[in-house]
Image (cartoon, rainbow, N blue to C red; front, side, top):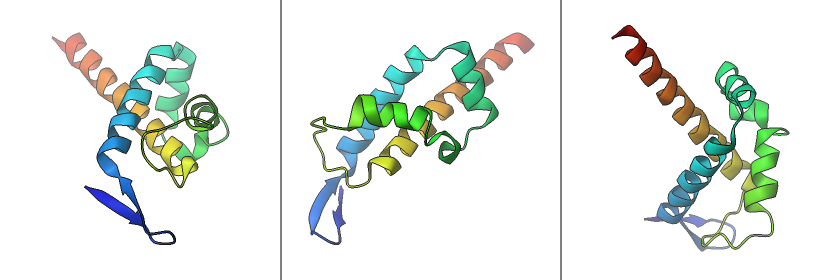
Amino acid sequence: MFDFNPEKGIPVFEEEQKKFTNEIAEACSSELTDEDKKALLDNPDPIDHHFGYGMHTRNRYLHNKKLGFLAFDKDKLSAQIVEEIVKRLQEGTDRWHANQSN
């Protein structure tokens, strides 16, 4: 499935972008310190991390890289990556709490 950039008529391949987002979220999640995890869980809105962790993901994984798909808005893509990281952290926290109650 793909979407189009309305200005240029160029396809944006959602499947490749989603796969990339998941791969980068996995890589980033494995590098997070406990302090990073707490900051993301305490404030999960990716907009609030635009100049922090969002910038880190853009600089390390998005800028000047061959992505395998067209990324017109790297700010939006980094926000999606931060959202995926937070989702993984929340799911992990939920599993931890479930194990503690058993």
